[in-house]
Image (cartoon, rainbow, N blue to C red; front, side, top):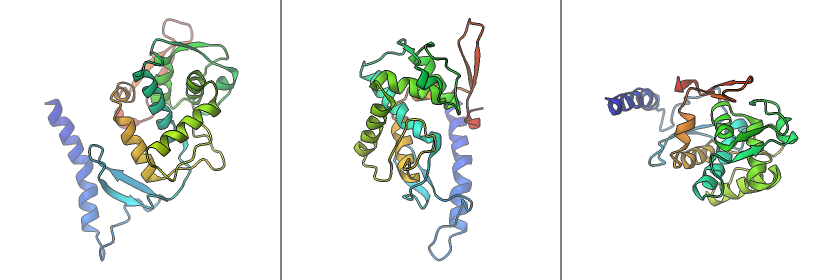
Length: 221
């Protein structure tokens, strides 16, 4: 029953787009399904087949989608045994001062890798991302180099990262195609779904500062 439900949801989500694209075919040109977007791409995850594209290689600011590469690197380090979910990370003042989307880390606050990853995956937390970057690489700058090395390893040519959070910065760019490949790579690490597929959770449980996490992806609900 569960498999049937997942198949049905996929069918409902996929078919309207596919049919609309066919019905609006004009002289061999695919309809503009996203008229208000500069670029976009719909990719089938298991095969990498491109279903729809618009300016797929155009470089644009990608904001917090940047964090997908940070998540890939964190998961690779977990899988390699370099770090553990139970490791305790001490947040630096730099991480605590990031602002934007955050879990409100305090300088010198201690939190496990698992809880920081929850903050990244569910709340797109900038402070948690920087704390993990510093823990793995020693500094955000060195971690960003790892991120840029990773996209080169994936063969992506339109992505350059200047930070690990996606906060606006000159020259911090990617493309719809590159982001789709990055998302597909992230999904190859099945543990991501243990975090990204959860609608709500809590941090700092059993403390006076219990913090409610709500997934920024409303489709999960």
